[in-house]
Figure 1 (tube, helix red, strand yellow):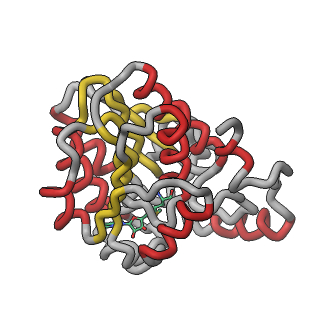
Figure 2 (figure 1 turned 180 degrees about the vertical axis):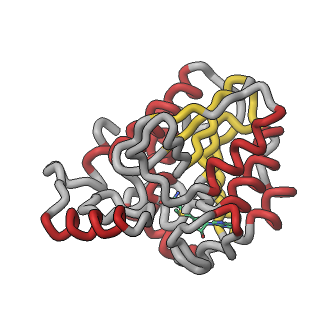
Length: 242
Ligand SMILES: C[S@@+](CC[C@H](N)C(=O)[O-])C[C@H]1O[C@@H](n2cnc3c(N)ncnc32)[C@H](O)[C@@H]1O
């Protein structure tokens, strides 16, 4: 287990933007496009995000928060493999459930602003996800294929100790919160990928503004507050269920 989350998907050399990246980023800034190029490693996750996930998952295990673990938007499994690795080592009795259309992103809405992300981006196959787990000799998670609005109403576990919401668009995060929130155990941790609060961190990665919008609306009448947490070149928010 030790350093699995650091070593397996990452090379050890810190990668810095080249002159070409910097020139492209300057042009993007000038055009007010909230997207940056960079020589990131780790696919869809940054090393800081993986460290966040590792510590949050460990936290719910150490405090024995009841329930299973879920990831809504698993893609090829960068994060899911890490979660499963932690469970295999420290809590083999807990189950990981993952949810994805495997057809990529749905239509975006006005709430997603000027994001460059498009319908169908990030499409993959269930087989590709399965091979990520096989590569590391890990048990498969419970895979729920389909659009969130069809799977979540009936296929979430009764109690959830940890949730990773990574559906990118306003509608996907809104439907994720709607169904996951009531199932979270007291003390459960919910991490929301791409949650960026420019008021707290103006330099944060804010290519998916619909994520924060969905959270702001959902939590307007809830006791919890979403906190922004540093996550390197990408963005992360989280809350503890009251
Ligand atoms: C950024 S990727 C997830 C990355 C993944 N968590 C990881 O660690 O690599 C977003 C995923 O969410 C899925 N997705 C987004 N909205 C969805 C929806 N409404 N229903 C089902 N899947 C959705 C997409 O298919 C895509 O695979």
